[in-house]
Amino acid sequence: MNRSEAAGEGEHRTPVLVVGGSLVGLSTSLFLGRLGVPHTLVERHAGTSTHPRGRGNNVRTMELFRVAGIQRRIEEAASVLAANSGILQTPGLVGDAGEWLFREIDPGGGLARFSPARWCLCSQNDLEPVLLTCARELGGDLRYSTELMSFDQDPEGVTARVKSVETGEHTTIRADYLVAADGPRSPVRERLGIGHTGPGDLFHNVSITFVSRDLASVVGDRRFIICYLTNPEADGALLPVDNRERWVFHAPWHPERGETLEEFTDERCREHIRRAVGVADLHVEVTGRAPWHAAERIAERFAHGRVFLAGDSAHEMPPTGAFGSNTGIQDAHNLAWKLSAVLGGWAGPGLLDSYDAERRPVAEQTSVRASARSVEHSHPGYAPEPGAGGGPGGKKGILNVVLGHRYPHGAVQGADPTTPVVPDGLRLTGEPGSRAPHLWLNRAGTRVSTLDLYERSMVLLSSAGTHAGWHTAAAHVARELGMPLDSYRIGEGPDAELSPAGDEDWAQLYGVTADGAVLVRPDGFVAWRSEGAPENPASALRSALVAVLAREDVHRRA
Image (cartoon, rainbow, N blue to C red):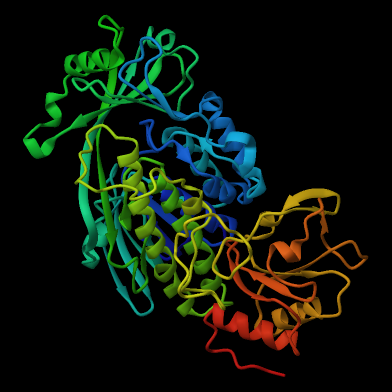
């Protein structure tokens, strides 16, 4: 079944109902579709975003899109900004004043040690159509101009009532689970009565889209991601859309002082941009404006019964560093494989409890880093309290947040519960609860990353040519538990499914001996590992899987 079944006139049945059709909702649809989970998505707007925003897709997000098979399509949609890199801070764009906060995202190409993917600048208005197309190609039932009116849940599922914005027709949708990706003012979260933690609103901006025939010549060859213009009389942030005529300018807005959005007239916006750039007669044609609010808020819980919060409905954080949308997309990925496993019958419902246990601490720590980044970059309109920011030691990197975040609690076995959710440095060595290390391998003549192996099933890695019996154990346990479990032996021998593409030892990288094994989840996080060979590999593996997948209903058989 590729689409949700009709259950009668005005009624539909679907395993998963996704509310919200922006980046996170569309990503949820994409990931569910890749796993073969039928679902319905409803979005009250008529189509995808038309405003260029949310352009930073970090390396972890691009890893997920790579495994989902759409990395190239996204890079094609983002090609116009492919040469842009770095963040510039300057009092104006005339002359050579100012400094680069950083010139390159990945200076020296060191990121290749850790990932097969790379950062990608793809604005939301360019990314969302790609996600929409791909989600529909995978059979997603995506309904725009459709608004959620109400919902109720019971022990067996969720009953939602939706309305067509165009016709007014009402439809009842019965779902096993509901995923709310309906934004920072989430009606679903409000209906559930879930509150927030965190300081709340931090600052406000108005995002102004404009066309300028002259600005490209003023900018010259400075291909920045964003330029913070610091003229105290007209500060703001300038972002290129096409490096030629189309631009976005973020101007500070102070509604707390009574300033209204209506005060941002075309004339005011033009003059503000001209003063900020430093060219009094700069051609500026304002084409649109949209308010946005930077906040640090985390929902008190990410799940309530059969309803789950993802993206901005679960957490808000400042845009500096592009943490918010990326965290939301990664929420969707974490949740999708768990819903697939539970609906597919190879995991117990308790697995879904790990969504909150894993993703909420990550969101809490990531939001703190995002706010600190805003302080470090002196984001226009942000006047933080004294002492806010990154603390002692000055500016900090973000790879430890992007790739190094961990799940000390959740669907893992053997994780150190005292491990920080976001460690100080980037250390990927195969510990349970961490993102599995990247290593290039050969598979039937094709070069693949270890990360390419993880998507639709649990995966067991072991060494070829050993006598530990992991491969045989995996086949036995998969049959016994009735679940998908791929087993790969890595080495040069005739029994190897994968061989190293370089000199690095996979076992050493993953923290085990040649007789050990590593169990990796469909989202690429290490679920469990055995550093050596236990007395009974099948029993050890079975115990780990039963615990990780909340299979309390499974009785062990010899």
